[in-house]
Image (cartoon, rainbow, N blue to C red; front, side, top):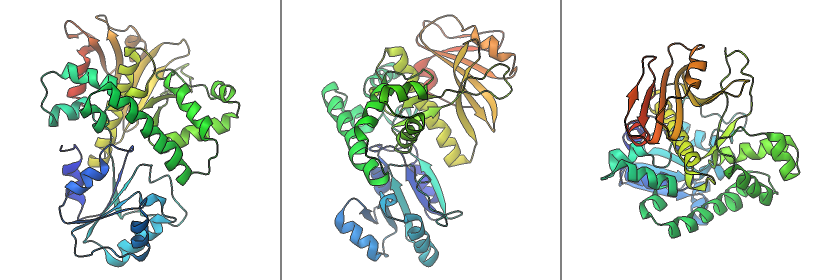
Length: 377
């Protein structure tokens, strides 16, 4: 299966070191090996490969050398910088990792000017529409709500397989990756935190409330949440409050990269799926074209809310509201429009008889059509 980043990574292989990151089992290694048949591959989790890396004894006649999970090597950035500065390219160098590689940075280990980074996400409806033959986008969206977008369980398409896959997926992250990369002993409490987050998707998160539930400090909860972000388990969507009077709500929301993990009604699962699609598109535009976009939500002191606000170069560009079944436009658009008169307004619904536009510029679109052609202003 051809992936959405392949073309862009291929174009940059002979220019810089490529850092390819993203959640476990999104297909990073598969994509890497598809870029060139003439490659040498090393996984830091493999003992023999670790020895080869220490000796720097890869086959330099190959066109591409792939270092998987290299961030687990102590001072890996200094090591990689030394290789690049001494030997240059070719062979092309591609580094993959299931953690945010820019997080594990030691002073003086900067790779500045030597790499391009790509963040690979699970499947979304836009990628499915482009690369997989499908009779119904609506049916594919139903599958995303049930199984999430990780390729293996999505393509398998059975509840039995997915339930076993998602358990082993989290176990590897909790009991291998976090222990390898973080000085954390409270794995059971982090596992409990994940379980609590599954039931609170789409709601502002109170650190103090989570701290009480977990019997720890707010500071500890924030640290654990940062670890889960760094491991690509969840991502944070903060409130946008710049220039909005009385909008002082500061609590962020958290969404799962794997929508199937979410515990709640189908509306919440749809909101998580939409959040994943927007975050993927933002990272794609930033990594491949150098654009600067960010994802927020809107909420004022009176509790009026819009699910998502996408900014471009720091300025709000799109308000997006997600509904399961609603033919009428949310009145909250007008509340926030007074602060951003030129802001694009879109409401998407899973079940919608007819798409609509309104005199104020707002649109109501079917969720599967909007997600299949997602573009951000």
